Length: 249
Image (cartoon, rainbow, N blue to C red; front, side, top):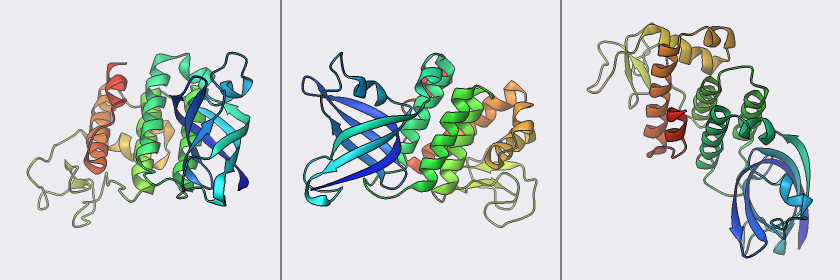
């Protein structure tokens, strides 16, 4: 039996019994972790309020047998709030739907429990901090997070040079299966021809150029979001349930 501490973002919670919950977190050093939090659904539990989705927390876990992955789930025995991002996010519908899609994406990209995913964790912390601050349009923050999550997991799209032959851009056609923009010679069936402004927006979001992204017209933002959603669905092999609510926001 052993104890370990880690900081993480609460991705989701599930009811367990009459007063407990199963908490899913993306942690800095141990990747995705599911753990049982005893008694957190009781009205007098201050501990439970810290373990809500979007919360950035420092948590102590109790592990039977000394192994994170094994028989039974570890227990959350202590928790301290690092940053309560949820307060600002849940108060605004657009931020909430964007944030929910971020949490689902982070969970989908961390399939194996206990496997470190430091880059994905840092991306999520930064995205939630930006979303809570309200400095940029929530949909732009979400698209930036989705593109960077794809990149750190080995699926970085190209928005300038041809994704197949490397021909210097700009190139006109976009194919999710080919990995981004392609030249006329590499064009494949099903390729689309997005506006140059939309491709420039996506390149800016991937590279962190917020000045360019914030100045983009709404119609190009909508087109860019559609490309991101299609590209993400292709590589995850199924869509995010939460993206449907973002599109309606």
